[in-house]
Length: 406
Ligand code: ADP
Ligand code: ASP
Ligand code: MG
Image 1: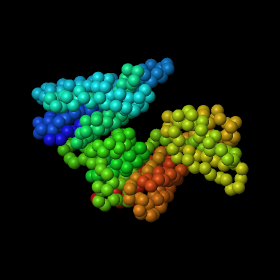
Image 2: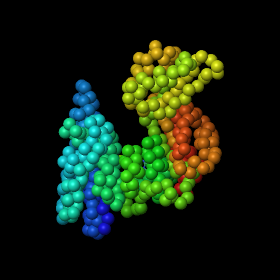
Image 3: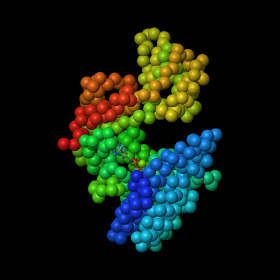
Image 4: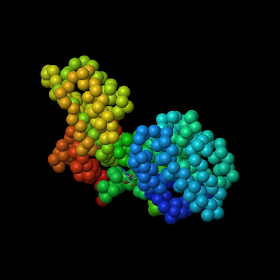
């Protein structure tokens, strides 16, 4: 007998027929003697719609009310899932974040889970009931509903698996697992059987949205055994494992991309000690996260240029923060460009094999793709390129590192 947390994403519960269909997976495991707890997302598109309405109504964007609205989608699917399980003759009950409760901090729209009170759930499991939990939501110390940030129901599922000391957390989605690249843009991508937590953290944070970054970090910290599987096909999925459980490491495990990038170029900056702090200090104060940074053009001269990237939605705010600090920084111009994408290769095997970067640069050069910024770490190399070349670059790199399926 195993204790399993089943998490179903938006496309897996996109309408009543889908809810019924995926519920049969839970029924099967339960009838085989397993203990099951279910975590659901909102129906595909619902959270987007709710989010859109909060913008449409205008006025002050009050994060507390934003959360009140966007948390609503999961309430519907939790109830429907409980009804679907009941109609199969099982005892099932839905639970919203505030009912357990799932305590979070007060950072509305991007709250972090502080503590899950799992006693009630434990009790229900012991009575052979199936608890169905609304993902993505919790309750702040103020008593108000919070949400964890878009894609956050993966984090809900892993946190619940950790709190219940579950044997497995199975994330059911619309692909058969984690692939060597997004299968939607690289048809020759292959499913990865086992991937190290560390690699998955990198892939997720560099754009592969199949798992949320925070969920992977939490699974790694708490030793939660996570599996990504298809809701629609009975195929093996991808297992997240410790690095030493992978026998033979490929050089590159996956290629990923993010279009959610913007590039800022600051020209004619006075080259003096402390100038970097004068640029990035105001950005930090505004809560703008800076990712890639290059500084160029000082051949003993007095003027230099800075190029750096931020997520696209922070672009305007970043430009304003820099303009406001113009006197302290001292520069000629600032230019913002949202037509860029970050393409990355990830793999633990890169640590021990030289020449990995060269293959990346040569492959892109052959196609006339210009590299605007480069950044590297032990596990990844990222390049910033023109957004229109994104898919071509991802496919070319996928082939160049021998990842294409035969
Ligand atoms: P869910 O609604 O189930 O949470 P998501 O849309 O959040 O599903 O994540 C699944 C999607 O992630 C897939 O449909 C796929 O297009 C995308 N994706 C991006 N990169 C990868 C990858 N490397 N492997 C698998 N899927 C990926
Ligand atoms: N429904 C939420 C969203 O669309 C949470 C999730 O699906 O993970 O972001
Ligand atoms: Mg998701």
